Image (cartoon, rainbow, N blue to C red; front, side, top):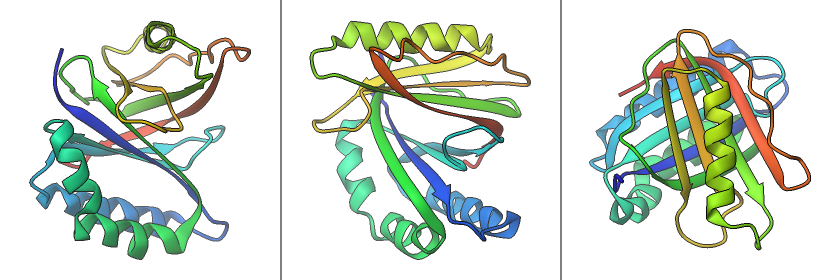
Length: 187
């Protein structure tokens, strides 16, 4: 098991934002590769039917890097100065990656799961892995939440040239946030 931590920001843009706004946000996010905690970062530009418009993912060296990353002035400036003026809705997650993270391909998808407190971690992991397998993606990553009081209990990502649509897990047990679209590696 890797010690890397994945931080994910889900961004829903306000009405009236256009392709230029999206490009500016992606360009601003790419600038965060200068942060010493960031090992890799990228974006998924959502297709129609996704719950959010953009997903930014940041791979951090380990759990100890999470707080310095989250409190870094440059990351705060990105959120407050770039994202907030264009924002309709926002969510985030921090998960410990179970395997090394690779993101290659022009298509990407992410599913984040909410679950009742009494749900076991193995049940969350099983649902995430099943979803990732359904995508038929050559590259996937799965992680469970680190820290307490997170909205999402786990996250799965899939990357490739084409991805098969994957269904949500049992809605009686989980609430899923799903985004798929064009994947862009930023660093």
